[in-house]
Length: 140
Image (cartoon, rainbow, N blue to C red; front, side, top):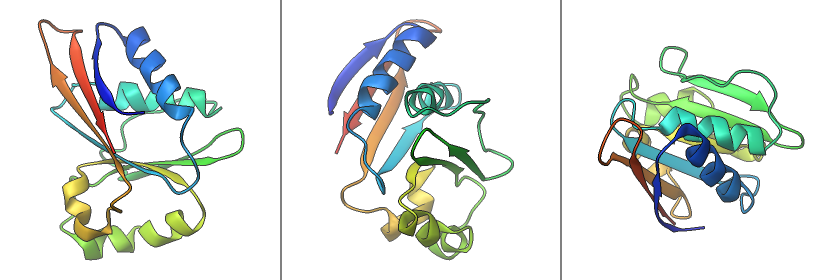
């Protein structure tokens, strides 16, 4: 699923994430880009719900990595902001997660450099007119 989408609420963001989740397979990497508060965690929450994750999904800003077990897949949410390059990213288990077939949601993906596969999805969140209104660009 690729394209440009406009969302005006948390519910619309979750609905888009659920639709996006339908096409995901083990080992997919999803790179999230956008300003603070632009909807990255909200999108991840919708994605997690679609994958059958129970429990609370929050931003991994301080813990760097959060694992969430879905109905039949592992969802790994990473925030690489405080890391300083590929060596740091490898040290938190990047290759292990890929080998396990985890679906990986990555904030601040530029910190992972060449570790990001060419097949990765890139989702860009931008504010539109107002606090709830966002444009979300999904590219693969």
